Image 1 (cartoon, rainbow, N blue to C red):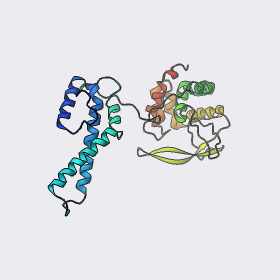
Image 2 (tube, one colour):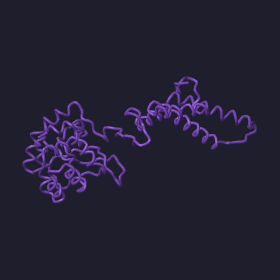
Image 3 (cartoon, rainbow, N blue to C red):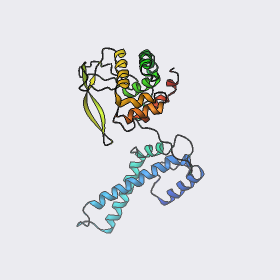
Length: 278
């Protein structure tokens, strides 16, 4: 049988395993979907057995025959569930590189971030966001010495390329592109909005007060003043010509609690669209 996923094929059958092993030796990449489904079937069978073991045994109607038939039934159930698909096989296939070329013993799987929060994607309006904010970034760059590209990269990270700008409960736009919080020194307008803070590496949803501006120009001016006047960020300005130094400097200074803040910013700064920014 060349198609190991044909209807009626029993994944837990020894002959099926032998055929699968042979196919994997000849063409590892082609066998990957079947291997993933095989694992899903075995996983389901083990889970059902664990459930059986945790339940009452040796009842008045139990015997060795009923236990044997129950085991066979569990195998059939796990087979049917695996054929229908629980999603585990698809995840394994993706993680092991099923769509990125052949899998070899000496090649490590290529992992991708599973969500836009982990690997921010450049939306269609990314170019418009850069075009709109670039004049303000250049003005702030003249005051801080920090390249406009770096500021745009951080603003893109904080707002998802402008899609998730901080808003108040009434929908009021804050024009706050950098997630700057309203501390006790802030005398201007404030909006309260939910945000994610990391406590000991664990993300938590909390409500924070953020600074609100009348325009994006005001936001960039305040951002420039924050980085240039606050001793906390003195090392950031000192490494302003190095993207990695800038990103890591912000994280080390405690600008954000996300332990991967600098890594995410570097991914954005590495996007092709950012290479066009002078």
